[in-house]
Amino acid sequence: MTERNTTDAAARRWVDAYENAWKTNEPDDIRALFTDDAVYFTQPWGEPWAGADAIIAGWLEARDEPGTYEFEWKIAGVDGDRVFVDGRTVYAPDDELPAGRVYRNLWVIDLDEEGRARAFTEWYMKQPRD
Image (cartoon, rainbow, N blue to C red; front, side, top):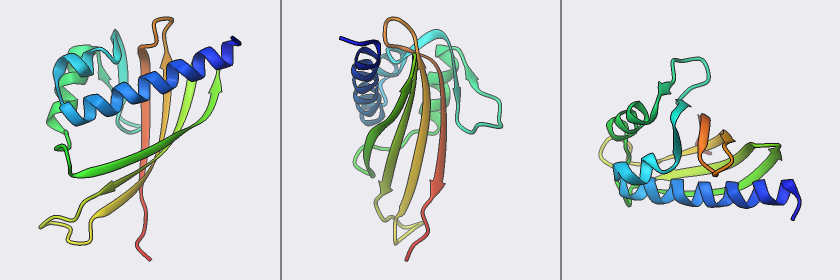
């Protein structure tokens, strides 16, 4: 298996595990995604959540409740241990936003040799309604 195929397979496993953690919001599921010293940038220009405990705390503070969204994704590219994910998140309508919301996502993930993220940066752009 080539290095690209190995990283691509690891990336797919990681995103599948991320989706599971997104659905469960369980601290152990979140922790399993990241190295102890990982950084998670919720926006590329801001301060990251640094370390597994901070990542878990930030995640839970900003969590989405299960069943309030749908997520689809594909691997957009792999460069060594860096993975690029192209995603689309559709949030269900609610009292605050009766029409729901749609976001396009770009994730950049640096994986370690065990397939856990050392660094994660996400960009999410609200898709305008037609």
